[in-house]
Image (tube, rainbow, N blue to C red; front, side, top):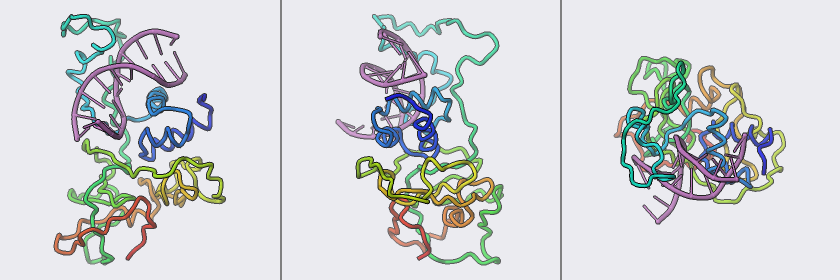
Length: 243
DNA sequence: CCCTGATTCGC
DNA sequence: GCGAATCAGG
């Protein structure tokens, strides 16, 4: 399989949606997850929380002893033909202030307790809210980071597809991956790979990856423990609606 | 073990 | 440019 324009586009969007390389590979078909990752990097797509610590400082010595390392534990920073002006290794790439769905976490129980105007100001309309301890919940009931907050290296474990990729052309008028862009709500509905998997598609709340409505679901103040329910776990995109 | 993404390097 | 092999952390 070759990287056609459409396939690249799909890759970008799925990558941006926080899907794992494996999921993307399966969805695209004909490619391995390595291919997806390799392509993603070649495309310059933003790095995502990887299990591997990003030791920028010491990373130098961690080159590639596997390929050809006879027996020379020479940690000497091989003076490679380093480009004079530019930085040697653009390892630290932390641009996207935009939160992305991923970190699984003890689903934050969200009772249908509404936030009145006189209550906590957890309005999504206030992206730069001074509140430091304002957690939010992502599409699977995942704890999310606030905009501008760099994600701690939490293990991304988006729900796995349980069904093989299907042609899935049963969806018409639905917002598919191909329809995603910076302006529309990326709130996923259904599971990737399922015939009816699609995205919200509403206009996003500026500064957020979701529309106003889904921001309301995604960004909520952490409720007091006492008010939590044991496990209101919500499957990936399981029709997030107030209970 | 499994998973993940990052990186390298032969093609 | 591509991606298998490999690395490395969780």
